[in-house]
Length: 94
Image (cartoon, rainbow, N blue to C red; front, side):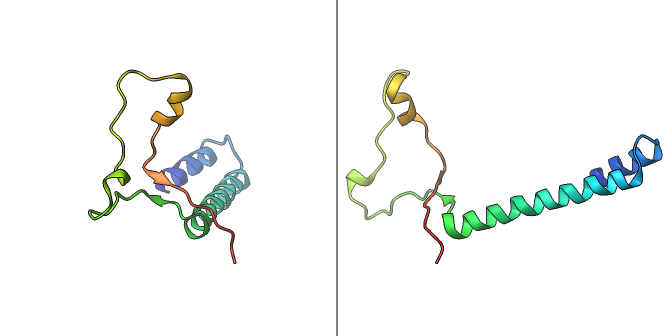
């Protein structure tokens, strides 16, 4: 926030922007930040964006992740090699 203020103030001080240009940029940035925060909040509430958790200790052996495959992979298997620390479960609101 401090850097944003300093850059905007320097633009006005150097005479390369009108004050209303800088205020408009700050307002646009604020609206964009609030929009991103709102989407993240909605995903957290309705999309259940959360970190994957390991299976419980009492889970059967077949629930454990399979060991990595040998070789470099590729082709159709390339998508199976990609893992993410997050899982997304979508459900409709209501």
